[in-house]
Length: 325
Image 1: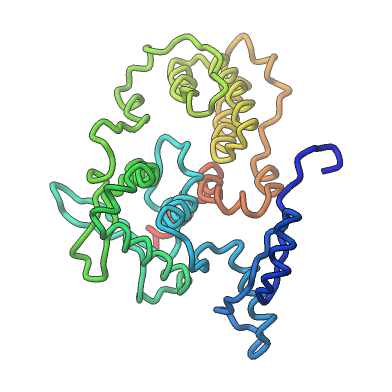
Image 2 (image 1 turned 120 degrees about the vertical axis):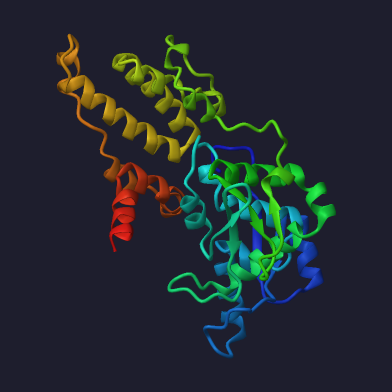
């Protein structure tokens, strides 16, 4: 602040509204936050402590905020899976792990289809957040209103596109499991998923590389994959170097972890395959993904934990254990 002409916003937390004081503070650019909610009562009859605890807890728990409008609720729901947005393909389990207090329900509609089901009264071993489930009910009430779905479609599409990438067919709207909002009702018909490019197996289409633009979404992440399939490991390694710089600049931690993992795979080929460039890469060390993850802030760790489990094979090990048992 000492080196900036822009003053950050200032707030004062109080427990009762004194109009004269509030107006005086407003004239000096200070916003008064009046604490009245004491939904959580860990201090029994100590009203002041309960109000302060509820307020501090709600700063990291949007589900505790009672005065959010519909758009804010939709954005809060999306924020729980936002870390998956930049990925080309997603596992349905990654979505449920980001949300928590939810599961998948399967139906037969021209083949098996998965629907996302937010828990209400279900009792589970570790997913029993009553406040969060109540927040999900507010979201479902929005989805149950045809007019609101139509009006808020631009806000809903980014969430439903993530569901589409996870092959989730829609969201169950009630406890009877007889109504659902399908992704086809929210997304336009031409919303194709990027991974469709790889499925055609025509790797020779992209054999040259151009530097990525300075917008993360514009980086074509199929190029390094095509180069890898064509045994152009040098080129694939260089592409990842370029993309990593941009992902770090954008703080795109999910793709940073994936790029570091891919770079380790390619480096292993460059160091140990029979090629003329082995010496060039022989002294390079693998990226220490574990150390990077351990040093991430706690909130970032939470959002990218599903990606970390994939690139460290924890997910596959857990899946193997689950199937075996």
